[in-house]
Each structure stands twice: as structure tokens, then as C-alpha cells.
Length: 332
Ligand SMILES: Cc1cc2nc3c(=O)[nH]c(=O)nc-3n(C[C@H](O)[C@H](O)[C@H](O)COP(=O)(O)O)c2cc1C
Picture 1 (tube, rainbow, N blue to C red):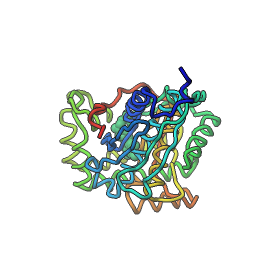
Picture 2: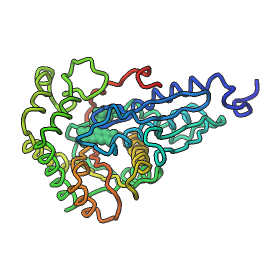
Picture 3: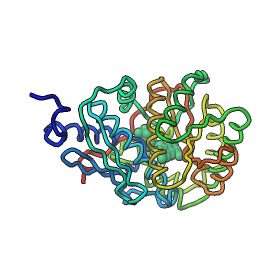
Picture 4: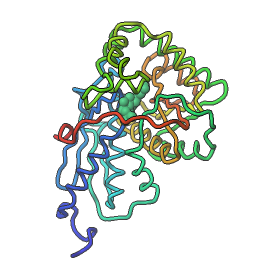
């Protein structure tokens, strides 16, 4: 029996199993409001990634920027899983030419996974968005550097925000909360993706992720939809942001679908690197989601790049996983 590398990949009956397992990993990726806006088409020795725009968020994400970032995070897991399974990959990014067919990943020859790929791959199922307050314990500088390198490896930049700028960013986040919560269409859209804790939905976010107990979670979507909760949320998020051991902004040099896909790959690499160092993370994207605040955020950073996401990181308690749709739901 010749080794894998000596056979054309498409002759290998294991290719399909590898790709199916890779898609299983891809769908563990984070996505805005847990919309899981992705579809996959598995071929003999390749898999295509599509944006599923039926799952878009027209109010908070009218251009599909966060939707494409979410797909980029799934793409990172997809590629990592194939490498972890001992195969090389060739990736063709199509996001710059095609709105929906975002990338094509081909399986290549046999190769051994690098130790870093092993460690990141092991973090896929342990990664969760953790919105709880973190311990005050600072994050060592070498870990911050590893997170910055993770973003750079995927063609993006991660800027740790410290000192006075951290308070200014926390203020922008609070301002973003007030703007969003005052908008009834924003509240309606968000509430449609938040479910009681015991609901059987395979997408969207259990209210428990926002701190609601089982009873409170029954009325949580109604409260989200009905009231302008901006003031209270702004105060909580301001404290959360200013009090987090690390607050960081992920940026890209351009602001188009190819850059958003890159941002998503960088996001997932940063998050998995964080998990492999025992860190938790969550998002405070409000200023990036408001066009006027996004300009002010770019000015605050002063690096001439486009802010894509805001992350807070630290050492936190374990939180429950959010649900995912079945494999059959995401295969074309
Ligand atoms: C592009 C993007 C934007 C997100 N924005 C926010 C956000 O502003 N606030 C928040 O709490 N979570 C945000 N999230 C986290 C998602 O809600 C989370 O990934 C999803 O609910 C699935 O949960 P999990 O990450 O624990 O698997 C974002 C995720 C992505 C990929």
C-alpha cells in the first residue's frame, strides 16, 4: 500500500471523512448572534465555503461584514482540522470576486501537523464566548505578544489598548450601547436571536449567556425587545471593558470582503491561541457597528487601519457552550 502522499488525493477514500470532520470543526466557530451564516459543499478532494445570507443581520450588519468575519473564523477551523488530520491544504480565496462563494479548500499531500496546529486544534471545542467578568490577574506580556502574532499570521493586526486609551475605548463602547438600545429595529433583531435557556433552538444565543437564570430567561427576549436598556447596559459594559485585564482591537489594512474573511481567520487564531494559554474572551463590538463611532475608534487607535472587532480577554470561569446546527443543515 503506497503512502498517502504517493497517491492523488482524490483517489483516497479517506478524503471525504477528513472533509466531513473538518466541517464539524468549522461549525464550532463563533458567529455574530450565533447565526452560523455558512454553508459547505464537499467534493472528492475539496470543500467550498459559502456565505448563507438568509442568516444575515440586516440591522446590526447591513453590509455582511460580520457575516463574512464569521465565515472566516469557520474557514480557519476548516483548514486547521485538515492539517491536524495530517494533510496539506491549498486555499483559494474567492471573497474578492464572489459575494457568496467565499473560499475553496483542496486537500493536498500527507504531512505531519506542527505542534502549534495540534494545540490550536485541541482548543476548538474548548473555545466559548465568555461574557462574565474576568479575574484581575494580569495577562503576561509574552502571552499578549503571542496573541498579536496570531493575528499577524493571518494578515490582520491586534492592538492591545492600555492606559488612558482603555478608558476612552470603554466610553465608546458605552456610547455604542446607548445608540443601539435606543433603536427599536436593533432591539427587535437582537431579541429574535436570544432564546430561553431551555429552548431547543440550534442557533441563536441562550439568555443564560447574558447572565439570565432559567426563569428570567423566559422573559429576557421580551425585555430586550421592549425596553430601552441602553443606560444600564452602558454602565455594565463600561465597567467590564475598563476592568478587563486586556482590551484589544482587531484591525485590517483594507475594508472589503477579502479583508473581512482574513479578519475572521485572524479572530479564530487569536481566540484559539487565547484558549491554549488558559484565557477566556468575549466581544464588545458596539463601536465598530456604528459608522460614526467606528471613525472615532480608528482615530483613537491612530494606526490608519480599519477596526473590525473589539475583544476583551482575561482569566475566567467556565461557561456553557452555545448550540450548533447539525452537519446536515450546513451541507449543500
Ligand atoms: C463577528 C462576530 C461578532 C460578534 N459580536 C458580538 C458582540 O458584539 N457581543 C457579544 O456578546 N458577542 C459577540 N459575538 C459572539 C457570538 O455571540 C458568539 O460567537 C455566538 O453566540 C456563539 O457562541 P460561542 O462563541 O460561545 O460559540 C460575535 C461573534 C462574531 C464572530
